[in-house]
Each structure stands twice: as C-alpha cells, then as structure tokens.
Length: 446
Image 1 (cartoon, helix red, strand yellow):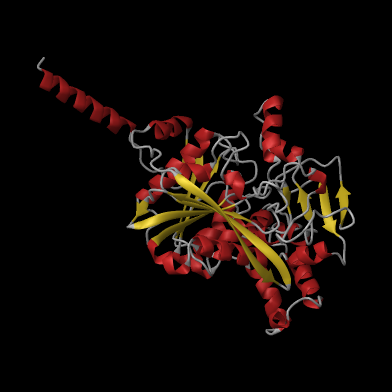
Image 2 (cartoon, rainbow, N blue to C red):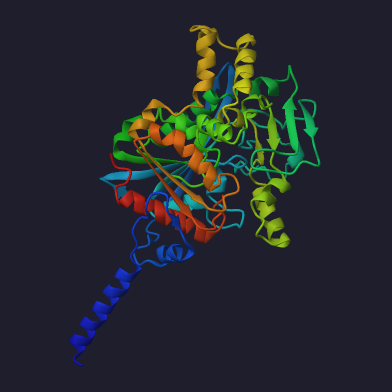
C-alpha cells in the first residue's frame, strides 16, 4: 500500500478511536458507572496540565459582634489562566467540617489535592478556611495543627493570640461508647462562661463566618476585577452551607458540587420527611465537636489499618474539629436563638448592631439557613458518590425538593461507588474532568 494511503488509513483509525472514546454529559439524575468513569479518564480530550502556579497565603483582620477575628485565604494562581467567554476561571472552595484550606492543596495520602489539580489546568483556586480553624501558632506558618494534641484543640480566632487555650478555658464532655457519625461525635468541648474563648466562640456566628468568607473572596478577586472573572463556588461538605447564603452579597456564576452540604432549610425538610423533628432543638450552641480517629475511620473503611494510620497522621494537620457551623447548617433554631439572645445581652455587642431591634437581630442570625433570593439567577450542579457516607443519594434527593425551586437551574449527577472525600488521585481527576466539561459546554452560562 502507498505510504500516503497508509497514513490516511491511520488517521481514519485515530479519528474513529477518538470518537469511540468521546463522551457527553450524563442526563440529570443519572448514575455514572465504573466503565463510564474510566472512559472519561481515558478520553483523548481529558484536560492535561498546562500551567505552573504560585501559592499565596493572606490574612485579613476584622471585627464582628465586638470581637476580633482573622480570616485566612490561600490562593493558587496559575501562570497561564484558563478562560471561559474571555474571562479567567476562578473556583472558590470552602473547606469541609474538620479540615482547613491546606487540605485542598494536599490529600491525606500526601499527594496533590483538588485545588492543585485545577491550578495546573489554568484555574485560579481560592481556598477558604473558616475563622478559628487556622493554627496561627504553627512555627512554619502553614496553619497546621500537627503536634497539638487533638484533645486540646480549640479554635484560634485571632492571629495575635499568644498561646493555645488551656483546660482552664473549656470543659469537656465525652461519651466513650458513642459511635462516630457524620453528624455526631463522642467528645465535645464547651468554652467556660466568662472566658475570652467563650466571648469569641459566641460571636463566631453565621454572620461572622459569612463576613470572613466575603472578605477573603474580595481579597482574591477584588470587586473592580469581578466583571472579568468567571467565578464558581464549591462548598466541600459543610462548606456548601455557607457558600449558598453568601450568594446574596457575593453571587457566583454557578455552583460546582461534590459532596456539598445544602442550606439549613433543606436539612430541616429532609429530616422532617424521616419523622425527625429533634434537630432544631439539639444542643449545638457554643459547642466544639471533636473529629477524632473514629470519625476519620468512618470515611476510610476501605483502607487497611496500616494505610489508615499513615493517612491519619497526615490528616492531623487539619483542625479535626467543628465549632460553629452545625447550627446554621442544620437550621437549629434553638441554638441560633440562644446565641442571638446571649449576644444581645452581652456588654461587648456594639450598639450599632442593636439599632434595628431584637427581632431584626434574630432574623439576621437565622437568615443563613435559607436559600437566598439571589440563587434564582444561578445554576447549581450537585455531584455525589453513591457510597457517600455523609450525603448519600436519598439526602441529595430530599435537599433537591427545597433547593431546585430556589435556583435558576439544578442538576444532579451520581458516580457509582465513590465516597464522600476526594482522597484519591483518580477521584480528583474524574470530578475535575466532569466540572470542566460542564464549564466548557456552557452549562453555567446565563
């Protein structure tokens, strides 16, 4: 056969193979099986690394309810930005319930996290840490909690704090026989009334978290630059409960989803459908929940003990506690009202916050639990694994009943056998591929 014919035949075969490997976005509500997942990872158009990046850590001091806080934002800025509609793409990630911004950078396996995966493909990644979770006393400036006994960890809200809290500042309540779950723990710590810790934990309200997040995003993407940015929010696990209400003051172009929590109202509805009406009255005000080895095991049951122990040592860099996010995420009206009343009676609450009256103050405290009106202009993508330990398919479906009418459009996609956390490199790559295809296909475009 003539060489030109051979080359032509080879080209036809290459095109045919590429066509066979091409994939389209799954239908709403579909489950991506293992074979389809492998096809996506092996597709010839799978996005490859195109850029280096620089990492910057910034700290923002602010006041809320009369207390001082420091918000931390970690930004990965690619050398060669990826564009959508002529705008550079920025993904804002809000951390899970026991972690901090650096867990987006490195997995417990010691490999690159989802933030790095995106940055290497030209996407600016903004990693948020809720106030209290960054260890400002870490000698290397990394915010790591490694070396601090997990039983002694309490939030550090202000970078000017000179030392860790001591047992004189908090009380411990433990139930050694209690099994860990995604919503409960065996160990709780409460600040002692009258302590500086008590004052700061009381003032770490949903409004404080949202203010810190807004300041962080505006530092990474100044308002004057917003028109040139295609910005998407991803709340990993409990992070979603704060990025949804944030849309009212700082709306994104869309919501990416993986293992994302919903609004408090959606959680309230889901529990009510199961006959559970205890959540709104649970004791969560001023509570710190320890996320220990038992909790970590809940999400790593497939690992052998030796591997799990290695990963646990890496996971100890994160705070491994939850402090104030349970109440708004679960629409715990009792805890939110208790917090509002204690703050209202506190001598440190600025007079300006009382100007509109007690009713308005309580309403603001509850507002973070509702889907914001601004969501009606935004597309929401929910992707979860069928083996998600914290937000399984039935939970996603229940949340959808509340959230879909509140959004411009809404789509659910499931991935067979994947779990809650993106710990593995193939899991990060699969979700990243799905996200980029949704972006490139214009699914989030208005």
